[in-house]
Length: 426
Image (cartoon, rainbow, N blue to C red):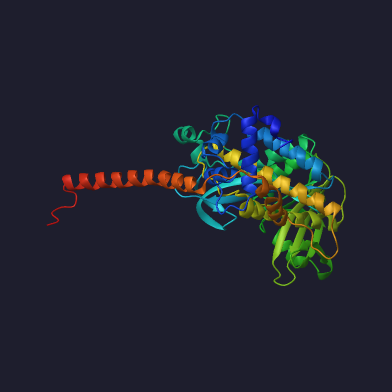
């Protein structure tokens, strides 16, 4: 709160933000404005709902504060900026950005709301930094839907790689210490993103499709064809980092690509990963301003998986995907506060590991710290309201739409009978 409190001019919203984040950290079975307000001891959900809708504050500025906080707490010169997207399954068509589209999270086409996220990853820790909601073309071209969901006039159609480039540029220009960027095929297949990273002098290890073509001294080849021509001596066994069950060993090969040089200088490589058990291949385009060893590129490629761990922790423990808001502003505010909560946990966990890490214990995890923080800090100090009053409030709130639905249904059936839609039922 010392980091972001100055973004809220009055003490009331500052207290609401504090209680909101405490609610996100708490082990509530479902996280929404109602459950968070009850957990905070509020008399009703209006305050939490107003925080996401009516109260004036800039979520972009808060995320900039989070970025500065992460830089102070976790900053390392060799850190990796990891980009990826995650989708939230939604029903209907009225939530901002929702349409039937492919989600890498589910691996299929569904009614999804997709967002691009940026994570800061070091060898010891990783924290969420920024987010951008992907707005499909039908949404961008529909003034009525834009007005209904409060989409800003400045928001225009942008691809996911373009959204990623904007977030990375904002982080680099703000002075965030980092040396690399990493992403999957959705971002590696876009040459404009790679060119922008070279302009920023930021090295990258970006996955590309097996149909991607590269030019070597022997000609131009598809990367899967080039991999098939490599001799056995071209592969080296290298760990991509620690996993849950030990080191993640793969066979790796990298080939210099001098013909890919451009006005930005630097060194280009094709990096290939081979699964030692299944033989499955993965391909990466790499660039660095200075020559680097194979192990450095492998470490960057392995650190890309940190963003999956961030998604899992934020969704299972911080309610990242439990928002129930349809509008542009309220969506960004909910996600921003979830990012703030995750950054707090990441920094606190890293600080504990640095000060206290006995050999007979595994390092403190984000989930374990969240559990301890809730039991030792939140629960002993939080206010409590009468649970019966909240039960009555919830049931009254649910009774109103139920009555409305039944009344509407009865009116529809009555109109059908009067107009003879059902014919002669006798």
